Image (cartoon, rainbow, N blue to C red):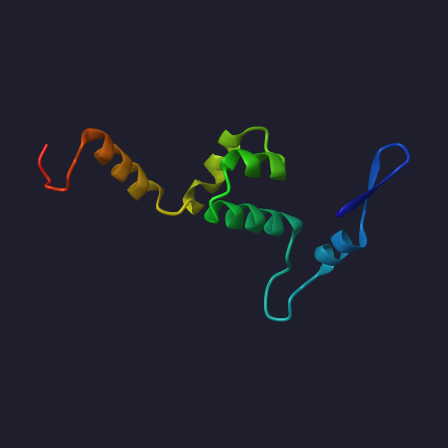
Length: 97
């Protein structure tokens, strides 16, 4: 948990959140919660997890928001689309249409 909820709905940072906030690697920049969130979503997309599932998991308003932010992570997207379209056209790889 990154926050503990107390009476009145106030979020109090958890020990983990506090460590992230002041955590600095010896040889690099501070690691923010947002960095972990972005890495989490990127790794899930690269692993083939559906965008809608990731969108819900990270709290985006829609899958479109998630896809717009992380489209660059989806591996082979352009090639897959071209192959699918070629299959629909019945392309047998002879280069002729």
